[in-house]
Picture 1 (tube, rainbow, N blue to C red):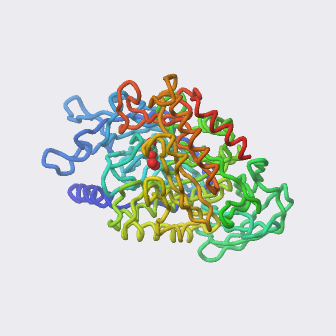
Picture 2: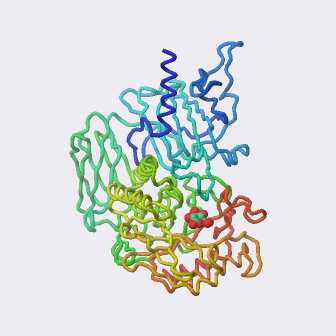
Length: 597
Ligand code: GCB
């Protein structure tokens, strides 16, 4: 029997290397559900040699860390102890939590103990906002399932597995980079490992609303429509959807699969950057109700402009990484999201490109409350393995998890599917599949990807990517004045842009060490960066653009950036330092955006 059990564990290990296992379909609107938080102090063991599983013959060992064993007697041999190990605050990345783990890539085992009183007739789901990169999850010594992908949520049903009294969750987290993963080994950001977002036990009745969608009906301003998806045994239980402020409500009868659609005649105030109006909506089934706040708006690409609610607007954007202000590392709080977004607003931005992966849910919700439009993307970046079917599957899963979590966020106007991926037949096929998948999941938003340029000569770049035909917004990154010549080159450029779609510059910029001053010809000074921005915006004035998003709001950590005394592990292209100090170029952007209002 024992042998069988170990074979099972070994099997799980092998299988989990390729697939997400035992996931329950994603439960959405989590911030507004009843939950017990497992955030807080977790014990952790750094497992450099994978001894948490394997013995000296590389066979599954009998001490598996997931069992959280303790010696039963003085003579008992157990060579690990969560209780005597270090503690880390979860959510958080391990690289900034523990100096020993600053550059660590490998496995760390985490354990959380907690008391619980499961109630009869209630269902429970163990929910993770995100774990980077691969998570193997155990509850009370039993394998629950696995997930890959560092920036999207996942959940498992644990009804019947929680004990009355003491419980423990163990998570094996591995952030090793691999060529065939998403992202691949090659990036320009820190590979922060760990349980980086909230961990919750969601509590739901036997039949509940697992997911729903609500928005203005296609092309209409006087109708709201959507669908609900029930989960449970009574899938045809009627569901009531109401928008109290509009005095509207409707009762839906779901089909055998628990899915029901609805529409309501109503003319809500439209959400926009000038008026970030949110409506409370309530969805109830069998007396249990759940609330959500929703933004009603329309977005579309019309000719070469993006229109919001039927009016063209210039996307005054800025790129942002999910990195905490004033301290390095991942953040996962509304307060830190607010700080970053208020800097963006101070710069007169109305749009943020959340690079290069789906950011935490607080960030998107905060942007929505503050009236900031959002571009959200998946980490299909640079040299992804375009020929590998599993890589495509993985990218599709991450896309699906991003859209599932955020489809009700009206602030999001663009799903972006890739960044600077070199054109090839395999890449075109891979990204075409992603575009088709995204449209199938959500055809109400614009699709884009940050493309590369093709130079006819040094001053004549063109956007000739074959995929411009299948995106709604043509975006590309350009570094004139930084990687490509000096700032004065901007004046000589002769751009060849498509003229039938909105064109957005999804990155431009250059580095400066905040507080380092000199002449405008001296690289890394604030003056050089300032000049680069002056020249770039002058160039943009001569281009027919639908928006721009400088790279980047704040300096961020990257192991690619090692120049001593300037970079020291930081990408310095921020318009704001990691301590929140505005560099000179910040004000160039601020003034230019003021004129673009
Ligand atoms: C890019 C990438 C971005 C990098 C940036 C840079 O084109 O999209 O991820 O961080 O350039 O700083 O070079």
